[in-house]
Amino acid sequence: MLHRDFNKSAVESILKNKIKRVGIHLNIFQGTVSEFVEYINTNRALIDLLENEGVRVDYHLHAVGSFLPEITARNQELFRMNESGKRVNDYNLCPSSQEGLKMVETGAEKLARALKQKGRSYYFWTDDDMGGSVKCHCKRCEGLSFTQQNAIIYEAILKGIRRYDPNARLSYLIYGEEDNCENLPEGTFALFAPFKRRHDLPITAKENSFYKDAFLKLIEEHGSQNVEVLEYFLSYNYLGFCADNSRVKQDLKFYSGYKPKLITTFTVFPCENYLSEGDDRGITNYFLL
Image 1 (spheres, rainbow, N blue to C red):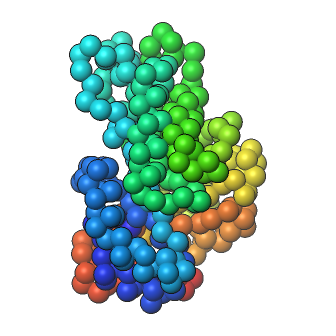
Image 2: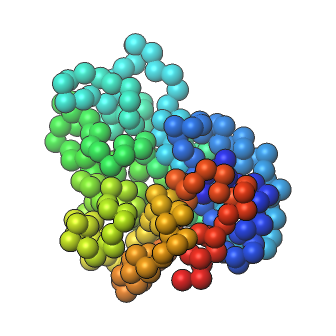
């Protein structure tokens, strides 16, 4: 759930529904990573309450942009180069920049220490490109595919985290576009989140065949216990799900048949104030499936 939705009402709903794992997510278009950390620490008592009741709390956030300080004109080599040959400060960084990668390592370590979740999997991701390609086209990177470039950045994130938590594992977020990673970096696992699929149709529908095949490829290449699923079952049509959960049932049956390590759902785009108004029917219904 979004961090802004994490409050006393959310905790009550989580405990009522006997949920055992919760991810708190930052929408980078509505807040910064530093604000997210402050919010988490302000609500640490609620998090401790959940964890004392056996609920695992994770933190899901696109973090790379926050690891890079304000970049001045004299060090634009940290920027990625777009297809027009211009250095642009929009997504991630140039993965061939050793200075930039060191910043990513340092930032990841600081964030891990601030969130205090030692001994668990981490969900710190590259910048949110909405499933698009944001590769660097500079001469040093031109021989690297988008997934190879992404892997370099994830390796830097994990290296930083492991300064704080030596046995940490890191999720490698995969939207299923051109980012399916054939060779996951050591210490990472695939997190399949088919953002651009048709959410009104089952994953097995012909309109979603591209994403179904992407998932099956991940299972084949990395093994079911190295793949997690992060879906959008309670996101785009929360009230519709409350009325008819047949499509979600079909998807859960499909995914479960391949025994991924974990199946979770985002609640990042539900109707506004859905919890503060006491409307947790979707959450209740989902956990009854």
